[in-house]
Length: 327
Image (cartoon, rainbow, N blue to C red; front, side, top):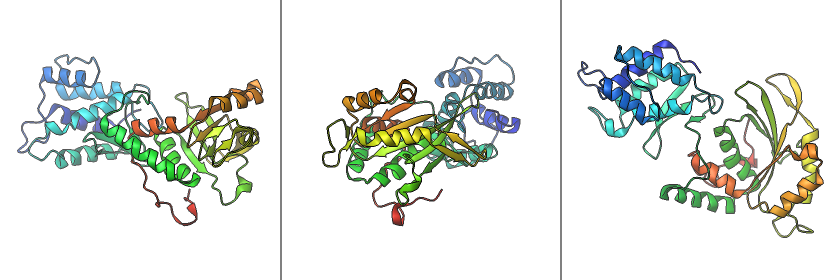
């Protein structure tokens, strides 16, 4: 990823600080404090004694040249630089919300298509304006959670307990996959079942090599098991076998390239548990080629990913009439 030199110089000036201003909003950092700043961002850049602003601009350019974790997001190191720069404890001549500093950073990043904002955790993040994707260092969904994160996890659990299948798709899965870097996410909906061909959602993901993978998603609200027949709200894995085969064999039309393409991988997503027996049954039923195309995501995966990506917990009743979202 590349930023314009003007943008890099403006951000570098904020990192360096300017004590000559009547009311500076950023901390002044000498040579040693610049090295300390980038150490706090988990890097090993050491100021070489050259002009501070130009050195910082060159350092930012090197950071932006690192691999991007997702499309339309800068490298995780750059996200940490912004978070450190906008630390509320460093507020100068204004309150902890830092409106003056935030305004200056917003003006600089706007030409690159990003906007900074403070989240509920009081940290500053970058949002890609066109896709609404939040840039952050890749998070580990299996790490221990804080008390606040556990509370959000419980809130989402309560939401999933009462949510319909459409709400699971449109209020939970669509925002989650967008945040994870998937794009062109299209929900088939449940109004016209004839157009689904085994898919509730299709989407695509661009690799760092610029190759594109296409994904189809089959969503079930509750538990998936391998019982002889469906019990109550639980779905039997045999019921989605045909849908998965249809999903992998049916083409989708990608309007961005004007071609029909096959789905590369199929996600089976459940709002409840996907039992080990259900996974094994489907794996044995599919041939070796199709088996490698199947991925599973159950409630635990959804909860963990939703929490670490810092998405807001949805509120029930937020869907428009007829449970349809325009795309």
